[in-house]
Image (cartoon, rainbow, N blue to C red; front, side, top):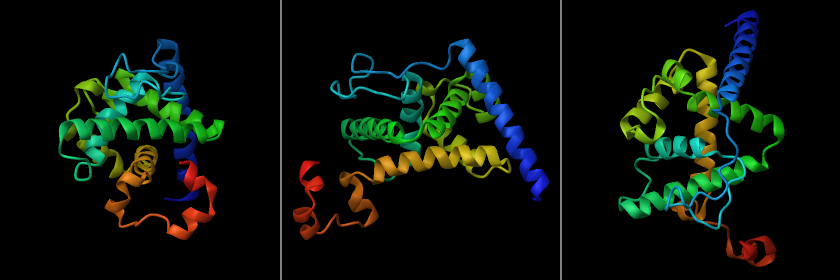
Length: 196
């Protein structure tokens, strides 16, 4: 790919995402943060208040995470649901730490995936996210990961990086990566380890 086609792709993608985001926003697809969702989903911790993810975003990640971490999630259904819910809370906590420009781009991506016409045409996901099977979610992720369209590749990278950091970055999953945890002398010297 030469420089000119790279720039055209970037500008075209930005215009496209801007148009989709505007359309989704005008249609009511872009929603406010979910706040406390325990009444909606009993797996979520009632003490946690979502500050970025909307209810639609939560449903999106509830569909995608089992496909992303199929071999790493617990087999027992309640533990599996708890691991997914806790990871979604950490995704929200992480995004809140991002700067406004990154949050704006993620909002465009989430709106694109939550808005039914663009979800069907671009992601080729026909059902709404709560109805999507793990196989369908996996097929979607593979299509975007292997796509020749850079915009889809970037969307896949954003989704997978956010999810991987939130899942594997937590001490409950360190053993899956071979990380033994911080050394004892570091824990004793640095107060932030004692506060977590």
